[in-house]
Length: 119
Image 1 (cartoon, rainbow, N blue to C red):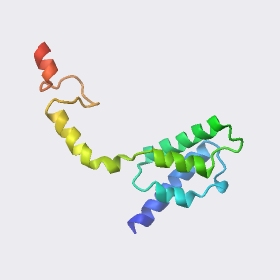
Image 2 (image 1 turned 90 degrees about the vertical axis):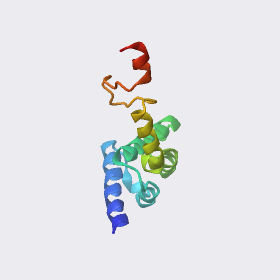
Image 3 (image 1 turned 90 degrees about the horizontal axis):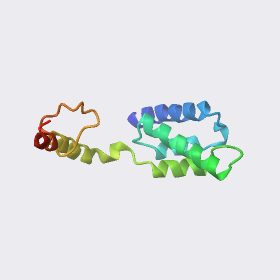
Image 4 (image 1 turned 30 degrees about the horizontal axis):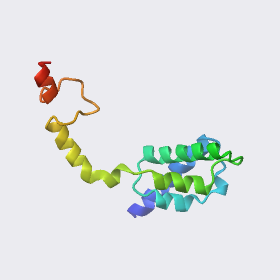
């Protein structure tokens, strides 16, 4: 059931992004692209579609995005869900002051560089 739910949500998202960019989806094999993008977030799907658009434009594809463009963009995109193992490591590095969070407002007093500078 979960895969079926994922399939319909992803299919809808890919469809919407392609239609928004005025692409003819009837020429694409969307079901296979949906299955190949399993684990992608909505933002990652949108990124892959936009990459496919750029690739098609760079090639001068007069009919827009084709299956080869979308397949290449999906293969080139690494979904964050495959990097879950790294997320815990990165979070720990932020907590230990070895890395800064992108959302850091500068008030992290455990930041060793800030401590050395007295800031």
